[in-house]
Length: 126
Image (cartoon, rainbow, N blue to C red; front, side):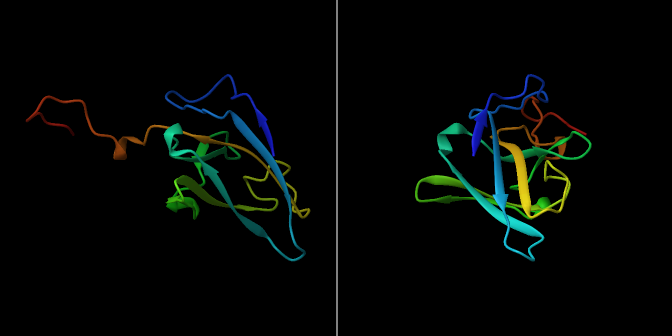
C-alpha cells in the first residue's frame, strides 16, 4: 500500500482527504477477481472508494452499481469493492495474477438524481 498526493485535476467537488492510495495484490491461481475492504475514519466524510475507469471517469467501486457497499463496523467506515485482474480497474490492464489499483477513499457529490435542489420552501424543481 502506497499513499500519494491527490491528483492536481479532480472533478468539481471531489475531495480526497487521504490522497491517492495505490496497492498491489497477488491473486491465488485461478481467481479472476478479488474483493477488498478498506477501513477509514467516518469523520473523513468519504462516500466511497473511487477509481478512474478506462475512459478517465471517476467511479465509486464501493457502490451497488459496481457490486460494492459501505458499512459501519467497529466505529470505522468499511468500503467494500471488487476488482478483476486485467479488468478496467486493474491499472496494468493485464490478467497476470496481480491487481494494481490506484484509487482513493473520497467524497464526491451525488449525481443530479441524488441531489436536492436549493429552492425556497414551496418552490418547484424539474
